[in-house]
Image: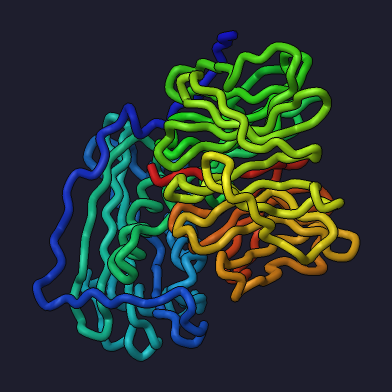
Length: 446
């Protein structure tokens, strides 16, 4: 069955982006840091307010209706786990005021404030309505600029421009880009059902993606970021579908009439989808090619097997099974062989997701009377609870760099999407959906 859904496309596809890049000075040194650094060792960064520059042709005093670039940049850098943001606005404003007449950087004053890095920016609106944003990164200790980038585009991608530069800063100091320019997929209540939604990783720009007028559950991104798989009841019986984000086309993962199928997940190469399907009232794990051929049954137990997730290399699958009397995690080869139990603690373990680096699995575990997010290493040396005494926490999903997790939590009364560092730090709510947000999945870099 084919069905077309209104698909919201990002303005970047219609805009001119990244006008020019300034190379770093030859004496600049790339410093690599680790996420396990203690908070006291975080690199201290200051972000003054971005300066508005009126361009010729724009009305006197006219400013674009955009969010604060400073706030966006500070959130991105703080959440990365590598940087400590200077929050003393009085100091920042005082130094900025002293720099304004000469339009220069007073390195000495920033050093006195204990700053290591300085992010400055300016933005302007052209006569055609486009916005240009200039960003610079400077090493205060060395008194030199490290990088500068100018982006140009429509106002709808203003936040994206700031996220892009924040990711570049993270890359310079870690060797891997940040995740500020990524998106989250989740479901939210609309009327009597649930629909698919997308938002930026920080919860902004939330948009409804589907209008199936049904119950939609468990979205999962394809590795390319161009499709989402999900479970829907819009054909009455729950079934797994995938949505092409470019065309809006919705297609069934498998055409097996009369059989319930759900909980789909993609292999890292995007060629295979794993899912759970019923047969005689029993659920087993199956795989099928993304083009709908080669259906293969992987488990043959008398229990309920569900919620598969591929390892990054595509060679193994973690899944949930109650074959030992209660839901626990098991791991098997991608062809169904070598099935072994993975978790032994907890009365009910669910929602497993394999980390991008392949060394850990995150999942939700019933601890006491509520679910909490857990992470366990493949060798068993680490088994850590990341949430505690904060409502029901479920649906963990790794960021593409494996440094962070998204999850849903009821800690504020209504279930919402939260994000946190992979060690459990910086837990913060990012969605504020009036009727709740469910089943989050963190998308790949764009």
